[in-house]
Length: 368
Image 1 (cartoon, rainbow, N blue to C red):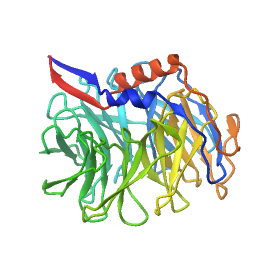
Image 2: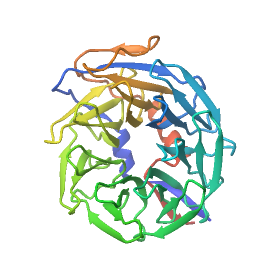
Image 3: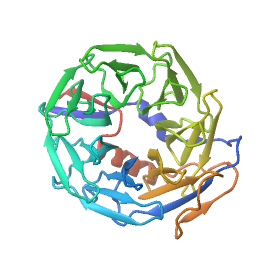
Image 4: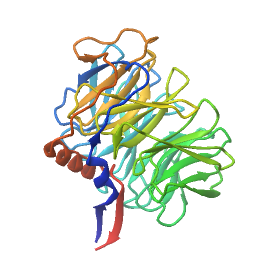
């Protein structure tokens, strides 16, 4: 029997000792509540229709959500029960593609902008598909966290799987500027795989596992180091630089994306979103719901704002000074960065349960 256990390192992430932040004025943050209660919003991506699309991970949710930049929600039920939808990305075919990490699902999903869902079973059982991205070859590439493989699926549903380093635990993946795919690994490395399946690994100096990864405006790959509270940068030649995230002791950057302002923005385990320039200057901003135990996904919207998911069952929007005005009806904040009280045990326990259920923790497989 295969069991999953939480890494001890995660405990440091939820022990949030909060300190004041400083730097740029805080963007205006608005929060909108997802219609389905306790839906577990997790990943988010900009769709080809100008809306934001997100996954709802819990059994109660088990949907793909859509929110317009005006704040209008639509939700679409996933055919497979308790699929635990994880990452989502815009595909090359005008649809959105997503992963279903639950061992009982073990699928790659496709949803059209009209809400029609098709599911494809991953060939390897208990693969725990996690991150997904469009590759330079017009196929979708995804991480098989549970079996240490990188998967590829064509838009017609044909699979190929490539083994990667044993115990690497690949997490998130992105197409690099060099024609290869780059991915985070929970074993403290960054991986690179060519479209023919050749793999190279680069050790992270801090020893932290790595999660979200994106291509920055400077042509390098930028990635999150949740266990070391750092943002990393790696050139296509493999040179790594790391930058500390100062907002909270034990803060955990999770996903990173390009912002419309030439900087990179990242989500955090804790009630924050962060910003880092290509020169390495970091600023973090609290969200209005300070009891939100985690902000998971983050993506730039067509309106010039950053959109992110919250464990508090909300979608957040961070409007920059050049962004258009946002949707009404939410909770807004435009204050400068401030000290946030420590989270109470209840939301921390809820966070652990949500992450455990979603498979989004840094999990270790071990033989029972």
